[in-house]
Length: 268
Image (tube, rainbow, N blue to C red; front, side, top):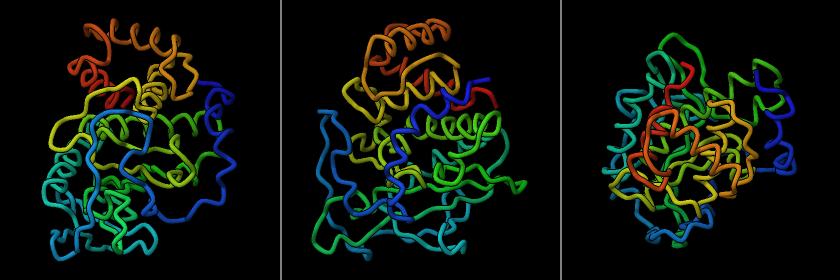
């Protein structure tokens, strides 16, 4: 079992953000949410009338996390298709069928200031997943970060399996490690990856955080979760890839996707 000190090593530095908004991403989640220099287009403001209304993703009802009521949200059509493909893969990460997605939403009016992919209907904030048998798989670190021992370990493992599945498709998957605004949801957008599957950049703090958390919580390897592509992280991921029989490093697209494909089901 992972020790309490290791489990909370990341959370200690984030506790200062307790005053974060109680809802999902603000319009300030802009076009370049980390230090990666990868090509990334700028978001544009899209009127709601140009988007498609959806009350579900892959047949899973969308429930607004604040009201706990089924709600229709607006999406760019291609982005909704990408979310549908990922939602269909959720049972592998959950160990059972999904039944409902709780969310803080997708499209947000930019009011002329296009600072977020939410303004284009190309971002989505996932708060919790209800399985078909009624269990909640929570992406809300704000609700369970104070738990301890085996309970916290189970939460973290479930969280990072879901995050790994999302990372396969989207280059930007913003978790509680990104900042305090993301303690209550996982944000995904296709601003960098577009229509393609994601690839790994060692300059991406977002992706390096994910690699370090997956190594720590799913592979049980001692990796400081810093967001830096340091020697400890390179050594740990090299050993994991070797165990998986994958060549090269995570910058190889096949090895990156193999790493995430394994992580999304590890321990289920």
